[in-house]
Length: 333
Ligand code: 13P
Ligand code: SF4
Image 1 (cartoon, protein in one colour):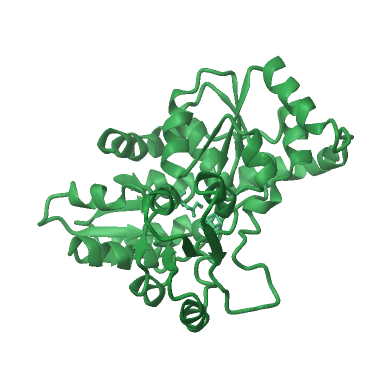
Image 2: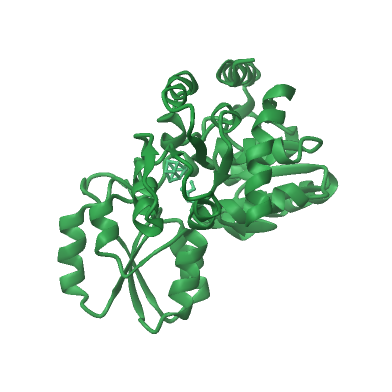
């Protein structure tokens, strides 16, 4: 079955039910109401560091893509409320299919996942029949089903290094992470040309200017950023890697090139340090915020718990095919 069609039907049905217009408690009581519903329904909230800070504060589990995937695999609660984007909730459903998985806003997609349409990727793969397919977790279930092994930015180097040196590798969908991995591992990989709009919005020139104004600061970046940005970074890592670095490093000031939501957790872990979001090309937009991640709100979180909607539903065969490469990743690291 076509999952895009699935999603379209689900979205249409929900729109017809006026789902997002249903009543919500006032701002004063919404947090306690969410906590009440969570208990009543035996649900857990998993949230990514890019969520709004009020959602991060409510989460039972807050983490990067790898941590959240591991937690999703082990959860014993009846319902997983995934405060993140669609591919994350989909991954949770694939690795723990007996649980009900809901996402506060079904439109919370991902530009990177969208940059890899399954039909095109299938043809691309057929051009390199000998290659092993490694995909970044930021992709759809259909792409995972076409993969040999999945990785996240936390374990990508380890996953690539686990593959025999004489084996040709296709890496998709993020060309920036792919180029970074080629540099780090010395492996020559065939790259799919996808990217993340948030991490490509950073301005190299403005970062250099900002750094001159803050010469004591360390510049840190997520590997989804462009190579010229990564080349000047003092440290490159996943969201959890960046958090660990700012806590342990001696510097007291950091210029941070990743989605701005992470600054909340950075400030909590290192309250006496200063964090400056890396500047973006276009001053008129909030481009260092992921518009998809930010579609989730406390109100939608409440509605999601109360009505147990919108639910992530996937065709059984697709889940079986997409599960294997995720399980391979979880076995390795
Ligand atoms: P990590 O949390 O794995 O670093 O990934 C960042 C990201 O882009 C999630 O969409
Ligand atoms: Fe996708 Fe980029 Fe948003 Fe992460 S930050 S969810 S990669 S669009």
